[in-house]
Length: 128
Image 1 (spheres, one colour):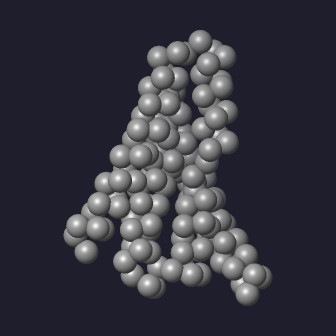
Image 2: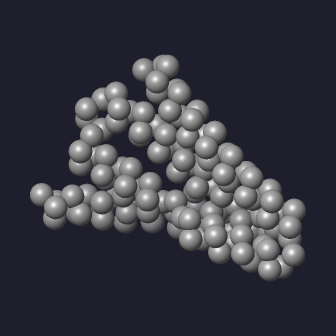
């Protein structure tokens, strides 16, 4: 049982990591590179929204429990989002004296992530 659970999480993490790389690649190659760390911001707030959806769905529909929950929530969302890159980028902004960008990034990431999680959770709760 444990090995099967580990495989589900690993498969999801593999997919989430690839998706994270593709978002970062897209932001770098389409002019989003610059003063704001768009790639990490996007994966983290999108991940919050998806996690809110999955959390709400798993509490309402049994199909989203067990191994599917491990695959999607722990694996894909865990592999897609990134706290370590978020932290590194904040330290780099701090060290380079970009205090306004640092503040905007922190605020947009934390408040935006929480709002998107709540929005997704509420959509499932009230629409399904």
